[in-house]
Amino acid sequence: MVESALKPISLILLHGRRALFTCLTLVFLLLPALLGEISLAGDLTVVPDEDPGAPVPAEDVHVPPNKGEDSGRVQFDPSPAGISSSEDQKTEELCRRRDAQLKLLEAAVSEEDALMRQVVQILDREAAARWLAAFISCRPLNCSSTTRDRWIEAILSAVERNGLPFCKEILGLAATIISIESGFNADPVAVDSSRGETMASLLDRAEKEIQEKYGTVVTVPPVPQIYAAYKKRYYPRLAACRTEGEIEVVAKDVAQELRKNVAKFPAFIQAIIFKEIDKVANVVQTKGSMQLSFVRARQVMTDRGEGFTDEELSDYMYTVHGGVDVGVAALKPMFIQYAARYARPGDLSWLFLVGMDYHYGAFSSRNMMEQIRIRDLSARKIALDGDFIHYDDKGRPQPRESETLQAAVTACPSIQKSTILEAFLLEKNPHYIYTDVHQTLAETHRHKFGETPFAVVGDLRIGENAQIKHGATWKTRSYLRKLDRYLNAIPWE
Image 1 (cartoon, rainbow, N blue to C red):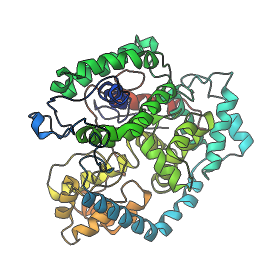
Image 2: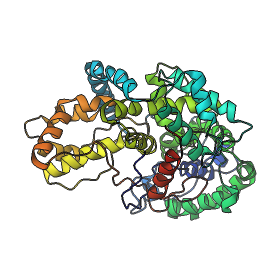
Image 3: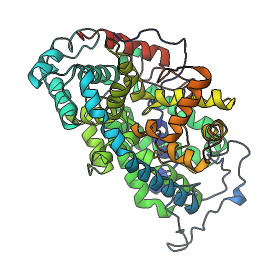
C-alpha cells in the first residue's frame, strides 16, 4: 500500500489563490483612471515592486504632460518590466538549448512507456468504469452519485486521450486529486462558506495586502480617490462572484480595458501593466477540477501538440472533461517514469510521489533528492526546493546562476558548467535522469555515501500566510496526509 510515514514537516503547499490579489491591486490602482474617472496627473512617490526599500522621488518618475492627445501619449516597450531585450535573448537561447537536449534524449525516454505497462494493473474500459464506480462516491472521495457517471467518463476519456492504459493506478490517482482539489467541481468555488469565508472578506484581505505592498503610494492623492472609484464600479461585481470562473470573467474585462488604453498611461504605469497583464487575464493561477497551474497547463498542451489560445485553454479547463484531460496530461510524464524506473511489487509509494509532485511542480521530489546529492558532494548548503535553475512567471528558464548550479560545479569538477546547465534545463522533464550529469552525480554519491531513495519530501514553501484552498491555510504535512489517506482508501487489490 501507499507509504504513510511522512516526515515531520510544517511547510506551505505550492499553489493557491494569492494571484487574485494581483488583479485586485491593478484594478484598485489603474482601471478607474483608464476609464477617465480620475486623472493620474500630479506628484507621486512610487515604491518600485522590485525594491521595497527607499521610495523613488517624484522627480525621478517620468510623467508626460497632459497637453493634447499627442503629447499625452508615450512610447512604450512591450517587453515585461525589468526585462531587457538582451535578457530576453538569453532566455530564448536557453529554451533552444533545452529543446535540442530533449531531442537527443528522446529515445531513452520512449522506452519508459513499455516498462510502465509491465508494472501497473491494467483493465479494459468497461472494467475500469466498474472499478471506479465501486469507490468514487464513498468516503473519503465523496463524488456525488448524481454526477458520478459523468466524472468517471471524464477520467476514462482523459486517460485515453493522453495515451495511457486504463490502469488502476492512474485512475485512482486522478480521482483522488479531483476530490482533494475541487470536490468534483468543474468550476470550484472561490471561497468556502463553511469556513466562515466570503468574497467580501477575501477582498478585504486583498485591500490590506495592497496597503502593505504599495505603502506610500496608496496614501498619496489621487490614489485614495482611485480606491473609491474602484469600489463603486467593480466591488459589486467581484463580491457577487461565487466561483473561480466568475472571477476570471471580471479579470478578463479588466485586462481587456488595460490593453485597450495602455498608451494613455505614464511610462511607469505602463511598466506595471506590461509586467502584470498576464496575471490579470489569468488571475486564478490554478484552474479547473484538478487545479493545475496555468503555466504548466500551457506547457503540457503545447507538448501534446494542441493549439489552444490562453482564453480557449482557460475555458476548456473549466469544463468537466477539459479540467481532467489537462490534469492527467500533467501527471503523465511523472506517472510513466516513476512507474517504469522506481515501482516495486506491492509498494505504491511511487504513486504518492507522483501526486505530491503534481502540486509541487514536475519531478520536484526527484529533483530534491538530486539537490541532496549535490549538497553532500559539494559540502555547500543549498535549498532543497526542487528547482535547479531560476524561472520567470511564464515558466521560462532565466539567465541567472543559481546556488544549485554553483554547487553542482563544485560537485562535478570534471564537467564543464555549460554542460551542467544544459542538463539542468531538463529538470522539469523525464529526460534529466538520462544525462551524463545525473549519472555522474548519482554514481559519485553512491560511491561516497551509499544508496539513496529516488525522491524525497524537501523544503518547499511559499510563505507562512499563503491562502490555500477555499481561503484556508493548509500546511504541507496536512495536505500530504490527506493525499496518503485518500490513496489508502482505494481498493487496489
